[in-house]
Image (cartoon, rainbow, N blue to C red; front, side, top):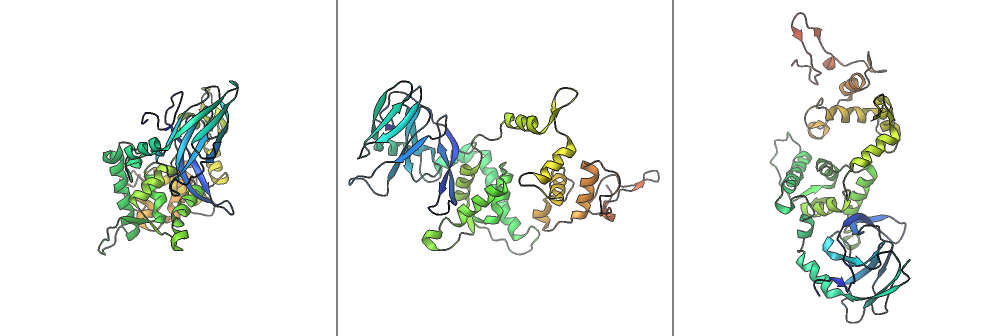
Length: 361
């Protein structure tokens, strides 16, 4: 029955593509791939691979799993396609265990408080039909983007993708441009950040290694470039499944901050800058100064990525005076001439704006 893809059921369930699933290699437990996996309201609590029979195509394998109250099937390999998974409520009060028959045609689930065991008939043809109806190639992944293939988000992604090629070749170069369908791997983090996903250094390393060694077992060579289609898959599978919720920001203020006179949660500026430079994947003082001044538009447009070089002296002075509210030069770093603000306001010779090139505004 197409209405019941995968499993003959006694209840209904909703498809909720949720947290990432991590794939490990057999030795050393190195992360090979991160893909979106189904949770249907809770993480997977048990998984098992259905045994292959003589009639089955050995290239087509299936995974059975249970969540808090559902049983489901997943087509292997897992790649983030939401149509490859299906699940239905099996025990509303909670499921405690899962087993399958020797031929993989039936699943058995054991309840908790209801003290029942359910037998489920597996319908793999219906699951494959659901995948076919969901579209081929990149269609399922386009639909996971806001607005789909024709939406503004995808057009913006294309623009950033090709802009990354310009940055790699050099913004000011006079050489003929080489338009390609690929970008170098070192540009991947910048495009991710431009699309609103800010991975940690560890996540960036995992993403780059995932692409770099994706063909290593077959060719013995590392991948150095990525095309737009593979980038979309990488973005969809690695971005936060739920985005950044307001409650997470509130919780950060609750943990790191304090209540001010108005009984509102607040963060002390000096304490925040100290945390950014000493906790987790911390910034150096130069990195923090560059990022903060770039966010405020005090650096040349495009920053280090476009200009190709970065002079930390002026930015450090800006950081010291603008963000720390300090008087006088920062320690061991006098203000450079091109960052001095003219005080000759009475005579009309005024430079009232911080400048990176010494020109008045």
